[in-house]
Amino acid sequence: MPAAKKQTKAENSVVLCICGMAGSGKSTLARRVAEKYRLRYYSGGDALMALALEQGYSPLERGWWESKEGLSFLKKRGKDPSFDEAIDRKQLEMAEKGNVVFDSWTMPWLLKKGFKIWLEASSEKRAQRIVGRDRISFDEALEALNQKERRTRAIYRKMYGFSLGEDFEPFNFVLDTETLNAEEVFQVLCLVIENVVLK
Image (tube, rainbow, N blue to C red):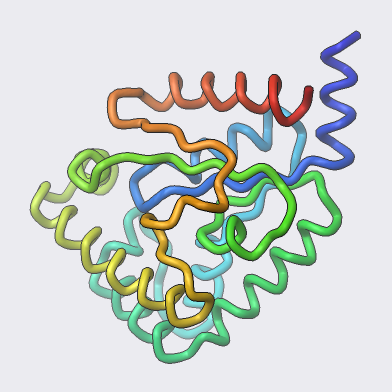
């Protein structure tokens, strides 16, 4: 029963971080991986949205992070690191318990353990995906991505000293998704998880 052994091991000890810039597909893939291997799923982005809701924002529509309101919240985060610090503390606590998949921009650098995956794609390719997702023009999507990424990089560089999307040192596996669809990326990740992480 090799499959059962793999599943038990995942349920008890696995910590996965799936990371990539906006539009890389990290959230959808992290959820699918968590479901397949019966792991808990935790999204740093979802936690930040919950905080934004408490602050009076309306982060309920798809593509909110790339909207004017989402970028405004991002600017506010840049001035007050307490939002991010609270979420990162929660994620570190969850990592200690194991059995979790993180969709997070900080955990690959803050966690000493776990298997860390980066999904790479050009800003143009990611903007194309956002056009289909959010029904906005390509130019609008690309500009929103560029703004978001500049501000997000500045936040994490100031807080923790790493360069998001430029520093790949923490990652165990980097996958170029430029010419792959979501299903192909998922199948590759499953092969890596089963043959490296759960072996």
